[in-house]
Image 1 (cartoon, helix red, strand yellow):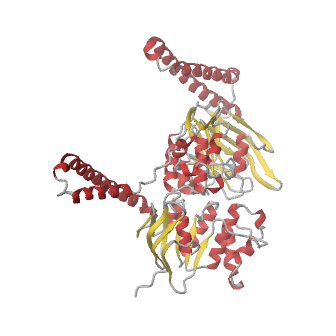
Image 2: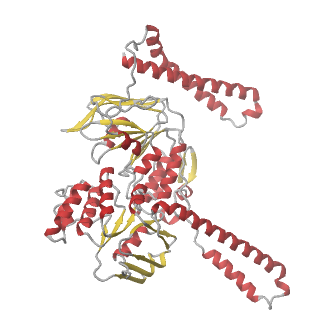
Image 3: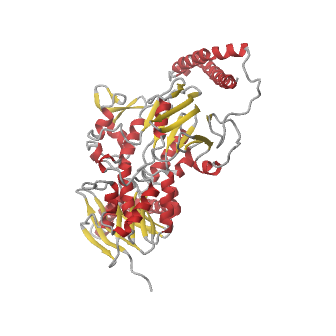
Length: 608
């Protein structure tokens, strides 16, 4: 005998003072369902989940809950007022005999139950809400971005818990690996309509593309029919006015149908400009040591970052990933060791705290009042990679509409704040991009586009993320911070790191330019060299002279590029154009050779 649905929504309509969010929406959640709820940022996923939880009342329609069914909703920003500790909040409403479930969840989520709510970060507050939900053990769990602010270890723990639970759940998440591992059905919200497929998230993108292709085909056929009917109306209606009024009305109906169709949201127009090339050596860190009190962050670390590297920093929350980034950028001084930056660095930073966004400022002011972006004397323009653009047009590239331009930043969703920060950093040329938790709150489509943009970026990327799929797609090296100041470096992304860790001496092809001294575990990056690797007098003199030669070549290249930037040069002075082009190619080759020679001599000098 079939069991009754746990939850059913019927003909739900909801409007927040403007365009309808949903219209005549229906869905069913069955016992044991493991459902991914997907859709673009701003499509209404969180609102729909609140309707499912009974926290938001629809304008029309019915929410039917099976008798005796308990529903739990993980709040994104829980109200902790009146609670002395996060633990007091998490166990509130529970029978004392059930408190053990909260304690088990807190251990897996690395949540300090004795922490004060007043001092708790946004991530700690959300983990407290998640521990509360798991402690309540409802028959239907509604989880809105549960992996945000969790480190990879905690995500793996939560994944294992949800795989074992007998409860039904609906998940909103940007974490592909998490969704692929856990879901067996997909709810897709698109322009106020919810579709369901009885397959997990792994099949979503193929399904979405098929639906959109069919939609485009139907729209194309409708456009052709409207065009044919309109031609008939212009050429033949005068002779048949009375007899064909039905056909005229049918044409009007076709046009109304076409006009009523809701266009799909576009994709954000993400684009990076790497500007002038940096030197081949981007960052050279030697003997880095840093601790806060008795808590070591890094111990005796050597790290060399070269142009074009994509280096991921992974490790548990609180281990010091962001601190290490700030040391490498020169924002925090190490207790010991040195950090040297290469030439021509232009740095852009995406910070996880969104600290560069003033919550009281409007989206408009966030761009036009930035001294690096605003165009002097033109309050409606923003400088985008050296070209002035109207701020409204530029923000449309990042999927903001005109109604949002004068709204305060604090009114934006997490995904919208991330897109606004991307708009700011992508307006500036950069050759070193630092991304600290960029994947939080972004939808899957924007993550795909960000991945593509990073793949085409000529500069260097330093990345902190807990999104395993994103790490695998982007990283060429992984710096694993495993606590106690221990740092190990592995080639490849997250999956490569997991495959390699545990081996006491991993050998891999090519030269790895990063190493952590003082540890005998993990892969070593110092290649074996003969004892006679010291420099001769001539080589030492050459090493000292190369930085000046590199600087001279870079200056000559800059002058030639400026000379060749004249668009009329080829036609007005073809001989000069050809000579300058040959000179540019020659100097670029010499620069590359000089940088390679310097790296080789410098490494041999270190080993002497």
